[in-house]
Amino acid sequence: MPTPIKMPALSPTMEEGTLAKWLVKPGDKVEAGDIMAEIETDKATMEFEAVDEGTIASIAVDEGSEGVKVGTVIAMLAEEGEDLDEAAAAAPEGDGEVAEPTSADAGSDKESGVPAKAGTANEAAQQKATPASAGVTNGAKAPAAPKDDSGERIIASPLARRIAEQKGIDLASVTGSGPRGRIVKADVEGLEAGAAPAKAEASAPAASAPPKPATLGGELDAPYEATKLNNVRKVIARRLTEAKQTIPHIYLTVDVRLDALLDLRKQLNASLEADGVKLSVNDLLIKALARALQRVPACNVSFQGDELYQYSREDISVAVAAPSGLITPIIRDAGKKGLAQISTEMKELATKAKDNKLQPQEYQGGTASLSNLGMFGTKQFDAVINPPQAMILAVGAGEQRPHVIDGALGVATVMSATGSFDHRAIDGADGARFMEAFQQLCENPMGLVV
Image (cartoon, rainbow, N blue to C red; front, side, top):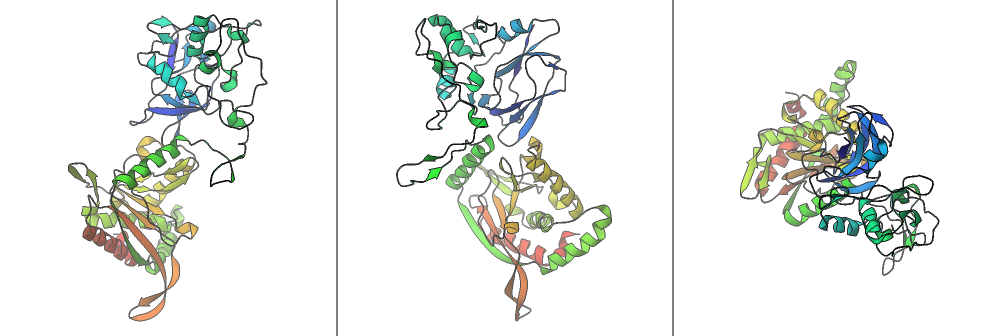
């Protein structure tokens, strides 16, 4: 019998995702382990593998569809010898309520560039209010997929097919406004039996056409282009808003002389050249942050309501700018790792982050964070804490500045570093001791190699 393929949970916290890309199409044969789709979670784009062999009978959720709940049937898989049309029309055996996903590829209004209402949350809400499992309503199968006069299958959502059957509407006469001409609830809910809207020229999917400039009224009367937020940007917005609204931040800044650290880096790179290892300044700062947490364990904590978690390991989250948004891969147990190992791991993680290939265990967790904008010339900044962590260290560019050296005014390479601390978990004095420890480790860097 046909096997429903459901939206997987690709991380412990995933509740919904975006079906970014299908790598198979109806009629394709797949075997266990074959990559069928790319799914965008709240942190990365991950590959979805087949667990059974068979032939793809139908695609229920178009690529680009957002807000697809975990457990939603996204495709049907036919076993060997099964009729593909019958498998495509078969009702899945899901046991949960699923909503019609919204789609980033929905058609757009030609005049305004605003996405059409087809496949919107209103349709999803109605499907959720009426228990449905990808075409199953109160135990009854959804109408089989209809075909037009030429025998071609008409693409329509289960809800649209159900409404059309109840009203006696011929779907062959309806123009779909959903992705790839899919007929959705909005196309049929206002029609009566025998009625059909005038055929309109199909508009290109919004994702394949360049965004159209518009004018924003009111005080901000300027041209703009609207870009739909991806899942990563939505999570960043939600978590950082939560952080600034709920976490009382305290900021402490120190100036750090980097000359000794830069000299040590030069010596280490000369000795590691034969091993193909080249340390960056950031690698040494990761180690310095971890060692400072070892010296001041009161800052390696997190606030958990009525409890304070004290961590015995320094897992350092490092901010990386990825195409989909900011992500923080983690160097686990950084306090006990050598600089060469930290450098190798960080390069691998940064490459994965930029390719959207990080696995959940590579970015979830962390006990403290490091954000470095020095490569952009930023002198100093205050970073927002990444909950549930209780601190983040923001470092700026090392630059030549006047500095008092051994009682005399001279010129030194100086970097400003600012720690953001959750004042519910970390007292100002402990934060100051941490910043002092970090400063001393950078200015006396032999403590990073022992």
